[in-house]
Amino acid sequence: MSVAQKIRELGRGGPRGLRLRHAAKQLVDLVDGTTFRARPVPAPEGATSAFYEQYGYAIFRGAVEAEKIAALCTALDDEVIGSPDPFLRHKSLKREPNVFLDGTRVPRDGLLNPHAQPESPRTAAAIEALLLTDRVAELLTQIDGARNYTVHQTIVFFTPPGTGLHLDGWSFDTEPRGFGHTLWIPLEPITLRNGPLAIVPWPRGKVVAPAELNVEAASVESYELYHAALSKYIRQHAPDCVVPQLEPGDLVVFASTTPHGTLPFVQPSRRAMQVIARPSNLRWGSWPQFEAGLDHSPNGPWKALKSVGEHWRIVCQTTD
Image (cartoon, rainbow, N blue to C red; front, side):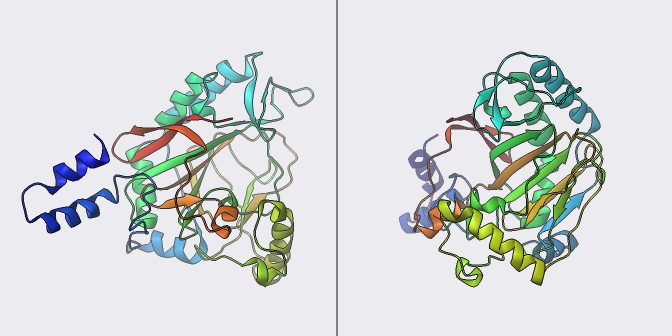
C-alpha cells in the first residue's frame, strides 16, 4: 500500500482536517526515515532506559537463543570458510576470497553486510533468524521506547579488527544525534585475551563538537583528526572503560555517540557480529552530512528494504 493510499484509508470517517492530522500522526511510524515530525519517542521509565541514558550502553545476558548462534556459525563454516569464492569484506570493501591467519582456519578479514549479499544466502537467513526477533526488538524498546527498527549494516568478525576509540555515529546516526544503536553479539566466548570490546561510559547523545577539540569542522577528511583529538579528550575527562566478558548469546547495545574500540589480543579467533540499527521513524545520515546541512534522509546505501515481522526493516540489497 502506498503512502497516499494509507493516508486515504486512515482519513476516512471524520472531518477532513482532523482526518488528515490523524493520518499524518499515524504515518510517523510507517514511513522509513520520515522527515516530518521525525523525533524520538519519550524514553520509557525503568532501570534499563535510565542506565542507558546515563552511560550509553546496556548488556543483556542470554538474549539470543544458543541454537540460533550455532546455526549462524554452521552457515559461516560451510558457506564462507569452506568456500574458495570471494566475499564482500570488512575492511577492504572489496570481494575477496578467504586469506587465513597462518596455521589456522581463521579468516583475516570479516564480512561486510553478509545479510544482503547474493553469495551468502544461508548466512543471511541465519542472521535474520537470530537478529530480527520480537525478543531483540523488545530489549531495544526497553531502552528507547520505539517499536520499529531499521537495520542499516551488519559485520561478521572472525578476528578482532584492532580499532581504536571511535564513534559509529560518524557513518550512521540519527537526527537528533545519538539515537542509533550498535548491537554487538558474540558468536564465541569473549575473554580478556581475544580482543574484547572496550566501551567508554558516556551519556547517550553527548557530542563533543570539533571546535571543542580544536579541530576543523567534522568532515570525511577530518575523521582521523577528530578521533585522535577525541581520544585525548576522553583520556582527560572519561578515562575509564568497561570491558565485558561475554558468552555466545549475550547482547551488548551502545549508542551511536558512545566511544568504543577493540583491545589487543593474544588469541586471534574472535567471532562476533556487529549490527547498526535505528528507530525507523527517525531521520538518519552521517555526521559529515549533518554538518553539511542534510535536510532529508539519504536514499543509500541500499537499493531495497525488506520488512520482517512487526518490528523490523532491513536492507536487503546494497550498493557496493
